[in-house]
Image 1 (cartoon, one colour):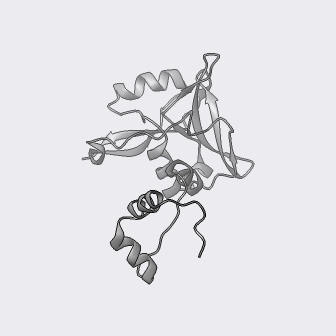
Image 2 (spheres, one colour; image 1 turned 90 degrees about the vertical axis):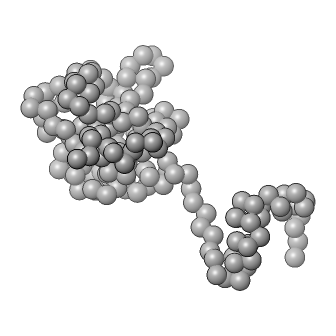
Image 3 (cartoon, helix red, strand yellow; image 1 turned 180 degrees about the vertical axis):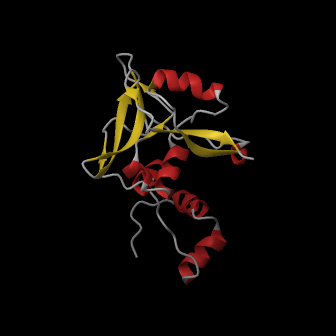
Length: 173
């Protein structure tokens, strides 16, 4: 068997990455399998099964929010306004209504992956935003475009009608 230029230190690092010598022995005996996963961000986006994704919806622009200490006390839900609102209005009013805005796309992507048909019924606005270098704010929207699942970025001044669901966090009861 050839190992190329693999050093003993690199082999030791590999053993540690796999979970130690017991894990390596289990792997070699066939009792354990290694699954090489892509990044969590990409995995979540893939789980959403979007046919079109805006090229600026990236991990750099929309990093995953960390897991909060009180995360289990808050659940993701949709809020629908009774009138047309801009994102700016929504981002101001939602916290006033007792909701938390999303700190990133993680929980929204998990929600969309678990509820894939919702975006085919109405747009789902993610309450996490990114500012372009020229100063305009954008928020991701899971949307139906010509019957395809699409993830677009809408800018802050766009008006959204009441059919739009705003993805926010609400306190569990």
